[in-house]
Image 1: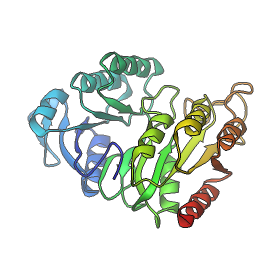
Image 2: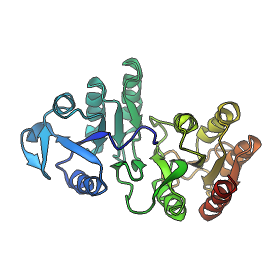
Image 3: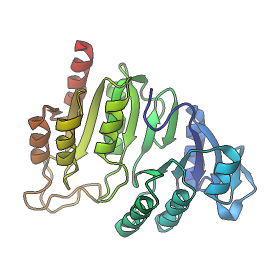
Length: 291
């Protein structure tokens, strides 16, 4: 099985007619994902990459049965695009766009909550979600891994790809890139809960990074609710204090948000934490082989 994205998922692309939307629509189709249309109010009615373009998300859902939207629109238009998806009550909205103002993310996340959380938001500033051998929604390369029993949730797109590649011989049920902005939709905890409930996920890899307390909160959740083995990696052991590192949310402030503190919180609840991505891959490999 897979979480949130399966072989039956029908995907629409908001911003499909733009350069990034076009490129990654092609890649998703090549990966076997069921992309069924795009959304662009200014280009409604045309055929693009062999797919119909609709004026609104609601119209696209009505015509195609879509249940996933991938957002490839500029930062200034992202809030409106996500709110449109929320209004249409699409079950999953994957926001790839980087550079979305934090205030905008806060606003559309609060809007989703006010509407009853009928739309799961992944991102923004994320690589998306991939269920190898089944579907791919976003920019995660489809040819770097295989289907298998590992679940992966990560703040970092690049580290997502590295772990997928290093463990390609074992494979993954679903890989979720949640993004590294200060405010995001789906969290480590959301993915941990879904992987815990997925009968075909045998072990979980959790990738975090400096800044905030998401990993500490994930550790508390693991202690109470996760019985499957979890292996962690925290990026940023050598990061200097007060300097943003790559992601807008990756910043150490005083003694808060350090990689060491996160590592200790995870290890305290039984999570084995690698010092490097390759060591993390080695640990999860040992766990899977021992089972």
